[in-house]
Image (cartoon, rainbow, N blue to C red):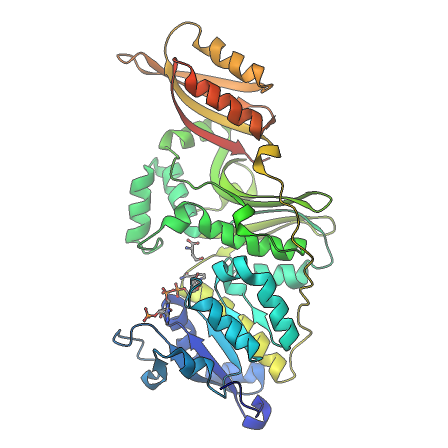
Length: 440
Ligand code: NAP
Ligand code: HSE
């Protein structure tokens, strides 16, 4: 069965179907149950929840939500004739993608917080929504409470975004902040994040950068008007960083952040990547600490713009879902403004990381003996990598090892990789501990 013929105005209410009632879904379900009159005032018609899909019928749920609405049958929500707007908050791709496609195919509008689905399938889904005259809104997919999607869809549409740099994963930013401020080891900072409920039981997608890659793919698609496949985004997580990298960064005048970066380099070619980066400690992004997120745009007309706020959690994410819901609902009652157009062109070329130039920080453990520094400098020189600074510290007198930290001038990534391969094969180099790009 598909959407019924009576529209919301004839029916006298807007029907809402909720898919998922976890951290965010519960916040949304509670707001719909307790803030009905406020929402109605803004929209012009009441919102009526017709069904809430969950996986486990036996789980205890919020007492603020009518238990009779809860179902484990997707069709109770997706095929309900009086559902005008589907809110997808299940996460992942398996159940969410067919549900969103099914809803749009029936001409229902969709509000989702699903970065994975939007990163992998956003362009196709937006085209489907357009063809069906439905809306697809996804403010909650990136940056929680921060209205970053709305900034790209509306506020910045008149400007050309040249560079976007973002801290869009709260879990890793919390871990990096503890490592920087308290000298904590990565594993201890991660356990602390888990105990405080910031990191999920399985935090691998946060720690390895995948979560930030999905969010960056969504932002880059909107900023540059063409889909960017998450598979083409270079990605490096934070698991290899050591407390002493933060000490060296501090001494050199930098902070270390997991940055998501997208740049329009030339002729539509994009530089898009997620990796830990050194950024000058007086830069605004360097001061974004803890679970906070921030997105910084540099554009031709608007100049520099920084959006900062809570990137996750039930309250902030519910706020983003409700703002989308109100906008879509106002469209159904004739109170809305024009919808964003999303005219995306074919996928743009992503420049491979090997073809990009950066300054680098290299930390290595070496034998403490004559000629070592000269041997390292020769390998770097042969690769046309120019050294900017060197710090050497005696580490373990009995083992005869020393730690060398080198920063370089701008060099080609492929040259750096070639040189680190050669450095690793030198007998005197015991370990290359860290290689971190400097974001200028
Ligand atoms: P969550 O706590 O894991 O909740 C997921 C909900 O979906 C649960 O109610 C679960 O049912 C239900 N569900 C999952 N798979 C299902 C399936 N196959 N069939 C039926 N029900 C299913 O997730 P969340 O943290 O609320 O996140 C929801 C979405 O918001 C995700 O896309 C996430 O990336 C996004 N988001 C979350 C945050 C955040 O801070 N949590 C921030 C921004 C965006 P049960 O309750 O029965 O397990
Ligand atoms: N796991 C994400 C983060 C929250 O730590 O930022 C949801 O996007």
